Image (tube, rainbow, N blue to C red; front, top):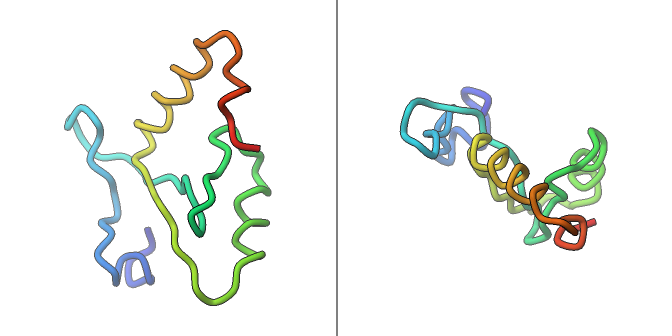
Length: 86
């Protein structure tokens, strides 16, 4: 979150509290305009999705440690790719 940016102006703190309340971590975009992002996305996917939207946009952000935990638990499932949004 950029200080003085739109997200900060709307009240999003610069760092997210960790899931275990042991500190702070970065935010991760997980949804754009009510469409989930692939948790295993390549570097261009998010930018491509952002470039495809107009002036109105909604985003969902989650703490990085939560996303990492979800990815790790998904990978533990035999056919985890069946549960990934492409």
